[in-house]
Length: 241
Image (tube, rainbow, N blue to C red; front, side, top):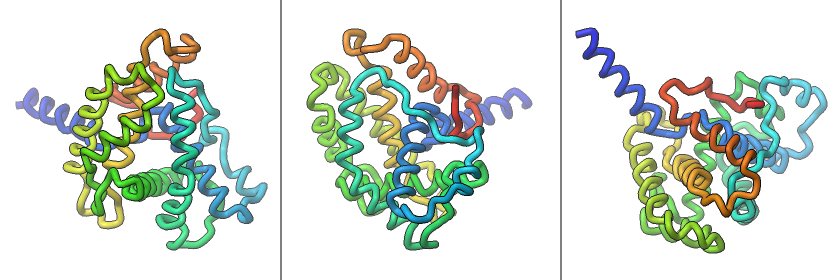
């Protein structure tokens, strides 16, 4: 009986880890963290003070930008292309609720709220880009076209494109199916799950000839692979050095 209970507990834990993005991939957290700082700064440029900066402890500072394995320019272009959408969505998700907030995006006691905010921003952006429907569910054909268009400059990607799309669609569907519907203020995690999956699969799938810095790529992949461990590190926007 104890063995059966242990097996059931294990399966439940695994399902929970694969259901939604749990903010335990330190490299993707870096991207979200930097975006959150940028969005806060652009939304409320006059409300940042030295005291607010001092409140950001060493433990909870955002990441410095790390080198990726490949497609770095493509991700930068995507970020620039989506900037206006993200600003609109951030104000829609956060700004209309409480007005300008104290600038403390990485205080440890605020992490849960920022996770929720970024999940909702991701849903909003996905809807504006027409890859998510009005309920935040993935629109499969549209997502496939989005990936194809985004990665058009990366000729090497063609060989893994179908695998990446099918993998990420499955993860997005699973995230939606296992979301906590009792939390009426939460957003559909499919959007942030899609973006994390796409980022992860591209970095892990880079062919050797596309990798400019082998050591940096090895470190990046090590960080990404930690996401697949059964007992992940504590959820964090932490400096992982």
